Amino acid sequence: MRRFRTASILIAVLTLGAATVAFAGPDRDRDDDRSRGGPRGHDHDHGDHRGDRHRRHGRVAVARLVNAEGDTVGRVRLQQRRRAGDVVVFARVRNLPPGFHGFHVHTTGECEAPDFTSAGGHLNPDGADHRDHAGDLPTLLVNAGGSGMLATVTDRFSLDELRDADGSAIMVHELPDNYANIPDRYDPDPDEETRSTGDAGSRLACGVVR
Image (cartoon, rainbow, N blue to C red; front, side, top):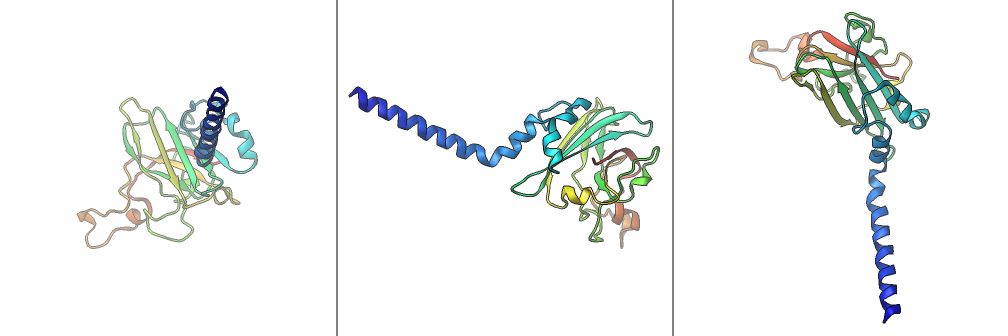
């Protein structure tokens, strides 16, 4: 009887272990992200070292956001998932005006203060109107204390595309993004600014994707 009981316990343990491995497999990239400064990490500059191994293989990129005065106001981490191929975008910001702000990838990896126009327009290789640009991302909400976080997943670009010859940049805008959901005042047609920017206003913060 003791031998039978021991064998049953051993089978149960092996079964549980196999189930645990099977469950953990699909989330391996997410676990890697957490252990290397992703959504559960802290927004410190030394966090850049956590993803060195992945960055060497092209799977992780970061952008340090600076304002017009050159002060660091946040950090964006982008990780391309090996299996799905899409890109996880995680942003953490501080010392920004409360409210909703347009948040996009721009075409050029240059952030020259104070207006950051050196970063060019939205990443838009297909020549689409706004909200269908490859670089269009969800609006960033900043809380009353000036801090905010954003996490999203996109399949509209790869990290290789962001690291092309002239690079790319992440931009935080002054105003909310209306995603070209045109208000009545534009009747009958949207103007060029709405089609290209979503009326998100001036550029508050910029970070070169590295």
